[in-house]
Length: 124
Image (cartoon, rainbow, N blue to C red; front, side):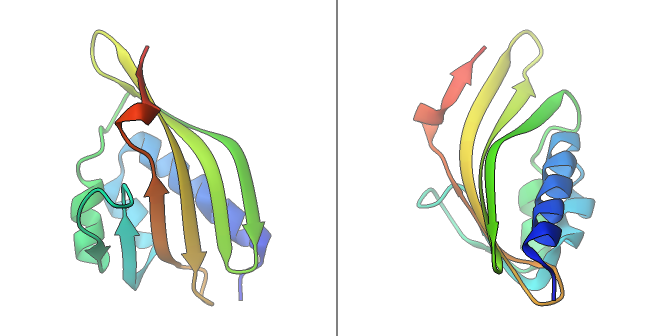
């Protein structure tokens, strides 16, 4: 069973991969039956690795940066406030996000919910 520290390390790896736009590698962090809701209340819940891979396939593959503002890892869950900065070519956009992940006993992500909306995006 993973420790809260192990789960925090998985979150760090997740954010590194998100910044690199590596959808296949991100998907490998998830359990087969995992769910992703991003943003919460903003659309469909992606269920299973194939749906999750398609979702992350929309990430930019270069010019992004993910920075953790604060993180809390307790038991089988991690909540973290972070920012994704994306290079749009002539400008940048920063999205501030609060995410909550749950983890299975094997250390795989069981669910991820991201809380953000248009009011959390800023043109830089």
